Image (cartoon, rainbow, N blue to C red; front, side, top):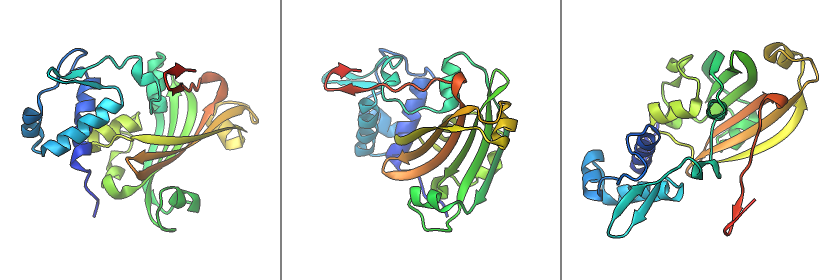
Length: 242
């Protein structure tokens, strides 16, 4: 039996989605806490925890005696943002599509169970996607997801392009942090056939561990054509930007 998403996570995910969808616009005030309690049918402690998360990520600004204001995320969210590859490509003006989208429960390699803090031999969901930008293959992505919060995921094959957006919409899941390990590899024969590049073509290889609060939820491998994608990191420390 699957686990339930914590109430504060559901509130956080819904308000975040409303902001991104434009239901709450920059400069508007979020409804007061008593009203939010009624809307979500949760305690004030739950509301405050969700608002605190959104405030720390730059979506909200709490002003004493004024209210909780929606702030402009167009620049703030580019700093230290956790995004999917499709989201990044769409922001650059590409039309993103999927060739093949296979979802199944599997017993993964040991390194996946280790990354997700599961016992060896535990089942996970495996998602395999070939992502295209303007109809041209650009990446191969294999994602392994802990099944606790996403029962029935196998029924959604070929129903989404952006995994993170789908998880938010369908399951109220928003990954809070991730660790990326990025290296370079050369395309093998299978990579070359799928991505339509010569054998030996440089590829960006990104292994990501994504977390839902303190819970390791995602272990993914992405192989991306190196000269068609830019990976940018923004750093900030004590008021200084690099």
